[in-house]
Length: 460
Image (cartoon, rainbow, N blue to C red):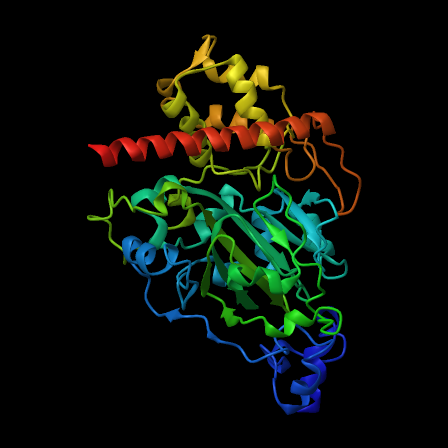
């Protein structure tokens, strides 16, 4: 018992060095009279109070509409056991195979102990495989299209409205000893383990105030807590001892669904490989469109190559387009002011663009307007409906910088996390203040328009 306790509370990166394995780790923690006294002070997250329960589990993949009604609409996490157990990757993806088959692809890398103040690195996959067991780095990158055929897809999001709202897949790999900050993300997420073990602690977003979350960046859809999840300082953060949580452990073939904005913390202990599927609820939050689901075979095997992801990376691409917004949400957002107030000329578009981007952008709004309007004086709803995926990506890239360094003509980039990275954003504090004012004005106009529309309907 003493060895188990010791293996649990030491820093994760030391597990292998002192002879501990992940089988020795107590998870989610042990809450007894000893810890009731000090509320698990300076112990890992999970030792401060007893969990509410395990995350709900299923042995069979739910049909898309059932998943939507039971879980996505209710923002209720779940675990699928053996959801991707037929993936060739589970047996194929050792380091030798990955190096010989996919070594020339580029990957983005982060520091093992997540720090969101550091920039992202980029390197060839074969170079990462050479160094990752000795350096404190891990991969979190777009799953290259070349690797998608090896991974089984989650059928719950392959038909209906989900089919158009699945925007990227991420690839995770480490030698263990990783842990995330306590955080939430903007996207709906299926996180699936290919090899190793991952532990998840989940907290409903309504308890955000107990976690002392940082002041949210108005541009970002994510946020995190400054509290060290390895050593919870309950004396300085007393509310933390009240945080209710659920928990679950994933092994090879298992997947967890983490709803958008659902707070979570993740840990791994030895070599771990995982793949995520990110999608967005969009206008499906209230209604689910069952298009194509009636004839969809939920028991049939599909690979990630069968998924129409918005954002992808293939060998030779200059950027690894990770973290951009869902382009169908972008289309929907661009449509709203046009539907309510009519076509947008360049002046109105600039106001909309500044408000939507909060004044932070990479390309001048006038240039974006010319690209979207195709040389016309206004952008109409017909324009928006017929914008191509590349058009919408142009607008998305105009708002956000690329995630990580860029490559020129496919040349190798070796860039460690934490190195300086220059992205020429075009904004200043005056622009940002004006953008916040315009955003407030737009929100008020849309709210008034919706109120008037509702009033007219009720009077009929």
